[in-house]
Length: 331
Ligand code: ISE
Image 1 (cartoon, rainbow, N blue to C red):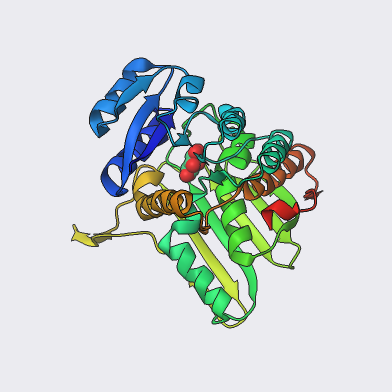
Image 2 (image 1 turned 90 degrees about the vertical axis):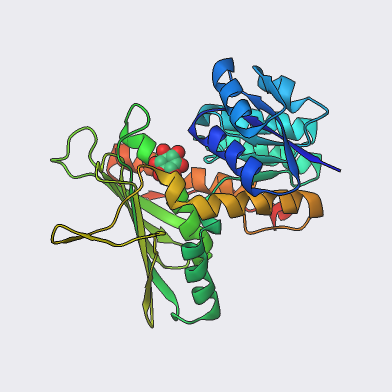
């Protein structure tokens, strides 16, 4: 028996998912790649051995030869396409964020619950990154004592889209919103947002969040850091602290300097996380057993924080994070 996957979106992430499934996930076939740009879809299909190319998402989702769907289209299509997968009864791995609006996330929660089956996993792949996972395991064992603070840095070389500070909050920071919430096992109480007044249009965005469990989380998102893709974090516990460690394969000594290379984007930094996420997703779909991946509920929670963050950016105030009560379906 083969397990056939269709991928919607043949941009950076769609192409990377196709490569990962083709090269690193045993027991699957790539059934179809979908993109409005058929040439781009064809190239990804040729590179990965995918069977078909389609131009229209419904044609992929409703194709009886497709067992499960990966959504790697632009953010505004995530929720509508996820809803279409739920309507077709197909498991879906949807890239983050589930939506930039909580009302769309709520529609997904409602549809999934009505369908009566958990079909949605959100691509918050950092939960599968060995460095975050190791720190979470230490915390869960009590090695670091109670968690107090989590300092996060998220730096991109250059914006991949028209930069607006809101995008740092709605598109980039949801990674931290999710992984810190998962690590600390607590929802958020409030968010404040700051920017260096002398920083200009592409200045970093600096967020301070308080959790309901009393932790502080601070996040710098610097979308124009120029020097490299750099994600850092330090968890501060009562008894000690733990830093994330990016995969580094060589320390180079050259010209009276020690040099560590930075990747140009997130793919090399999170190569293990993506691989493990995609394998875990397929395994869960096949066995029905859960994995540490994010559910539609987790997707909604990240968007609720982002929405409050955008308001905090606009008003300069500390904004409470508002969430509906967690439905039993997601317990
Ligand atoms: C992008 O969509 C990602 O998910 C990357 O991990 C993040 O670093 C980047 O800022 C986002 O635009």
